[in-house]
Image (cartoon, rainbow, N blue to C red; front, side, top):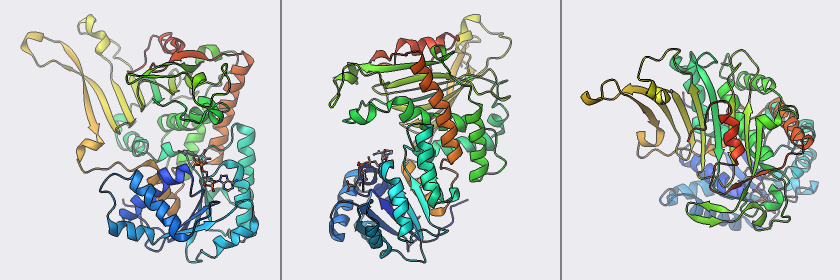
Length: 489
Ligand code: NDP
């Protein structure tokens, strides 16, 4: 089923000169246009504080596309078509009178989609000023970038402010992991394959692992990151969203609210991690000096812009999480995420239970383990580890663990995996909220995370050091090995 062509939009991009807009959003919009997925009448209106004439802005977008698209990805004709959609308005988001300039660019026959690629501190001003310039009608949509707050209370303030001007069915909160093809593929894998759908519960599955690792460090963002940490930056949104996609019950329909209702149920079923159990269920780490791909790198406290030597901010988290419901009783979800890890990857591993009785050579028991590995990056693909007999007369009934491999990139050498933002920008224009986060999801997720962060404070938890280029502090290995299991490497 292909996506029907959406109604023409005025796509108004606030923060159009920022890093996100230039590095991700304009290349994604270009790819949508190139693939004929943008309505021919849609316009893209960049809004920022910087002084620019129309030509200067178009030139800046051309430069960013030249830089971030692959060689040969943009022909002159494709660029000319895209450039014809671009417009620019210089606006101070705090000045109501400036919003009249936006009004002059809009057309009533087009739906206005406002994308806020700005710090959340200006979300309120933008909404208020859109409203006072009478730019909001029943159709107008708003797309919000993360972070939506740094805890439950602050996320409620942002959500309340936006809700004053926009109904929930017009609000599109981004978690760009949901735009990844493989995350959507989880829905197909689980709900279109009886092979997996019928075995997706605690009778068949032993445990689940979710890893989101980065090789990079702070990249000049120390003063921002030190107030946030890995728990708020990665676990509250991306890791819990992935957990929801794995753990949710089948929705009755493939529509936005049916999917999001099921995700909220998972978030509400997460077993609390409190001061009673935090030392057994959660590990925080901070990288020390080490090496990544053979190059020496400094520790967190020595990074450019570091303001204190004894920061207690975590750059690594691993958790043992339980989902308190019938489907998942007794199945731990092990989550880990960190910076300065040995590899950049995002992976979900479903580890199946072994058969109750083993009839082969007892020495081979360890290799008998079905695993379904769903990889989101670097390459997107799905691998199912199955046990077979070695095809060799000499070997008798020797077993081997082999993988059935679905590597999406390999199926077609010309295949290009779309960036997550392409999918999300398209859905915001189509008006489908399935891949966006609803208010109650964000708030349930913050409520659970706040409790855990408070527990760390209550017990006076200190971050544990790990050398850059390793998989986190020793306590993270102990967290899983205590249960007789190990991290999938
Ligand atoms: P930048 O600082 O690079 O850009 C922010 C943009 O917002 C700029 O265009 C800036 O305008 C505008 N802006 C900032 N403050 C004001 C203000 N008071 N009034 C008017 N305009 C303002 O940030 P990013 O592009 O990196 O990020 C934007 C948002 O997206 C942030 O909330 C960030 O957390 C989030 N995000 C970013 C990601 C990324 O990869 N960069 C990834 C995920 C989320 P001007 O250029 O005129 O200063």
